[in-house]
Length: 294
Image (cartoon, rainbow, N blue to C red):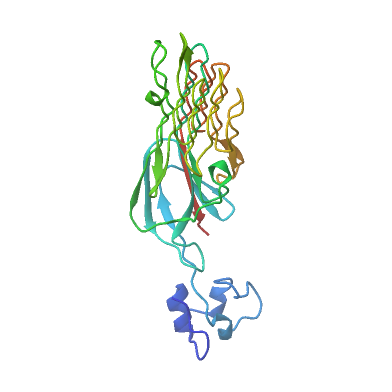
């Protein structure tokens, strides 16, 4: 609760707001809040309207810091546990997030097309397919389940199978869900399989799969070895759709690239990348949560 903006303030009022150890003195509260000097002359009047900054306190995942921010990275399912909330003077009762779903595998054998990337939803930068960043996620003092979507695995040596049998897994946290990528289609014995719909759509010799709005692009349809869609846009020919970068972890990383129609490269773990044609498996997803902690 902020101190009054005018009138008399006592040292006791300041100590109640900012804490400290008795006996109190004004010099104990250098830099206690915005507008309070860090050294030299300090007066009671400096504290009109001052508020003690409180910051979010939480645990879960792998925790690192970057500048004034704390970052929780989940590469496997877990729990984000909030024990205290921030206020407007410091941290807030909301957090930035990045939720990447698992990518899908490519199709099989002749005409095998690239798998769609896992959907990308974020409040930190542009979302998948270039949509504007969403609002931060509101939090309260409670435990939040975090689910990391697995990369899709083709799982069979018999072709063809419908691409929608092999999607990437959904990832979720804080009430936000990103959709797993759609599987890449194949073509065997003149059977032209369609791509699966998903966070990004799978490529196909038949109809390319569709990506989810503001999560990812569409897969390339109508030709052999079509690419899978990516968070950065639609596939083009045999090339998978571009991914999208995020620096929420403190390092710039590209996530959710669509699988190329050619080759058999698997998507890397915790990227949400789609697998390449000829049954390259999709990459698993990731969740990152960030907030000011000092």
